[in-house]
Length: 264
Image 1 (tube, one colour):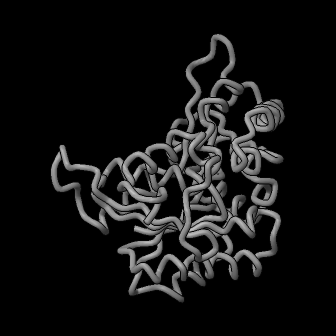
Image 2: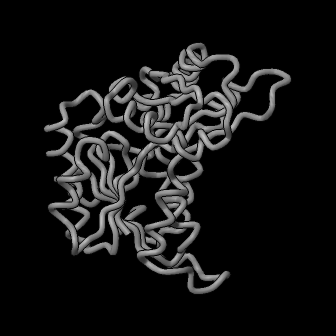
């Protein structure tokens, strides 16, 4: 299975697949030279996404996950045109529909570029089903997560929490990076005495079709034999050290076969 993103946003979905299929070989294709993709033009995002997708495709994965909302919005059609039917491509979209099913007011935390976009507004119109929705721009949060800068993460989370209405019962994590700091987001938004806040990410929903493509887990106690290949702008390398600040990154390092690097 392959997964692409500019940076660490792909870790959550990849870890979800790893838990389901510890024997599956994984290819993680990053764009550290172009991260973040959010401020870039749609044309630039598509060009960069195609480059890292083709690097992953050269390893012949059974399926390719686009582990980035920005890339999905701007590039999914082009990626599918380039790679399918040989390699199915799975996009990532904010979990607005399941979040709205809870009935309470919803906040969508997303990058400033995605917040207020026609794409996100369309998802709200199609799937919010009349539930009140507040779009919350999270300035600098993805970049802080990427650098594992705890202070910057907390600052960005507090700023976004201040923009989140007090009556919100559900938060949609509209950027895959945010799933790596979900606990901090929950702590910042949870109101004293209120019902537990519901958080909706996309990792599980994205992992499900990938698992269907590569098949069910062979046995409940299947060993963690799958390899982990890391591509940095097409060049094989190691999982960046900052990724190991997160449980998802450590999981991928732990199950990778012994060798000179995290990937091989």
